[in-house]
Length: 454
Image 1: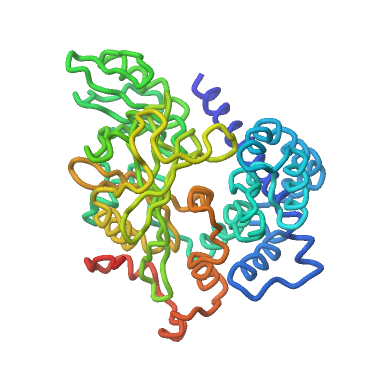
Image 2: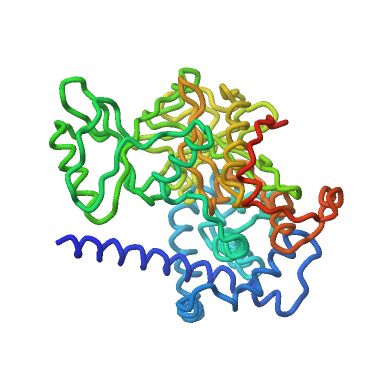
C-alpha cells in the first residue's frame, strides 16, 4: 500500500504546484500586457518587472507552457471568482472598519488587477482598501514576481548546493559551522519502525515540509507516554508506530521541542514563537539584515506559529527589537490589527524582544555559512538557553514582511540588491567596489566572526 500513499502525496504536490502557477500566471497577465505597450520605470523595481516580462516566455520547465495556456483560459474564473469569494468573506467587515463600501472594494480590485496584477487575496493582504496603501499601487513585490521569476533566476545563476530543504542535512551543516541550531534526534522514513524514542518533549515535521504543514508537537508526560498538542496520548511504542505510519509516504524528522524565553512566554499559545529574519548578500558579498518580523501562534493551533497556518505577526524595529502592532495574513478580516495577544491579553505593540541583537547576529552568521545563496529567510527561536536556528528558507514569502509593516518592498533596499545581483544594476554602495563580483561558494568556507552592526 506504500505506493498508493506515495501516489497520493505526488498528486497533491502536482495539483498544488500547478494550481499556484496558474494563479500567478493570471496575476502576471496585466503586467505582461502593460510592459508590451510601455517601458518599465528606470528603478530597481521597474527593472525587476522588466525581467519578469522576459522570464514570462522563458520558463524553466516545459510544463510551464501548460500553466500559461490554462491561465489564458481560466483568467476570468480566477479573477472574478476570487473577487466574489474574498469580498463575500471580508467586504462588510472592511467597510465598517475602513469606510470603503463593498461596491468600491470590488471596483478597487478590478482596477488594481488591470493596472498592477493584484488579485483579490492580495487586495486584502496588503490592505489596499485603505487610502494611503491603495495609492501605493505597484509598491509591493508580489508572489508572481518573486516565486515565479526572481527566485528561479537566482537559483539558475548560482545553482547553490548548501542544504536548506533537507532538514537533517541543514542541522548537520549548521553544527559543522558552529551555529546554534535545532538538532535532529532521529529520522523516520519508508514506513519502518522508529528507533527508541528519547524521553523528552519532541517536535516532528516532514523531511521537506514548509509552512508548518504536517508538524506535530509531542510532550513527554514522564510516565512512558507522550501527549500531542490536540490531546492524543500514546505510549512510546504507540508513538513509534504512529511515526512509522506517517513516514510511509514522506520521511519525517524528530527534533527536541524548543520552549519560548520566559520574557515572551505570555505571547504564546504553546507553540514556539520565531523571528523571521530576511538576509541578503550585499554588493560586496556580505550578508545584510533586510528586515524581520515576530510570529506568534493563536487559538487552538498550539503546534506552529506560521503566518499561513493562522498565526499572527508583528514587524520588528531592527534598531531596537521593538514590536509593532500584530496582524494575521489578512485574507480574513476577523482579526485586523492587534496591540495585545488575542488569547493572553499580553501587550505586543511597543514590547522589546529579549536577545534581539543575538537574533540579528545569528541570522548574519548563518548566511555566511550558506553564502552560495543570495537571499534567505531564517526562522529563529528565542529560548531560555539562547537563540536557536529552526530552519532557513531559500524562497522566502515576502507577504509576511510587507503586510505587518504596511508598506511594500518594491522601493526598498531588498529590491535594490536583487536588481544588483540579477541585472548588474549599480547601487550607491556598489560603486565603492566597482561592481566587483563575489565568488560566493569560496566565501562560504571562510570563517568570519565579525558582529552585525545594526
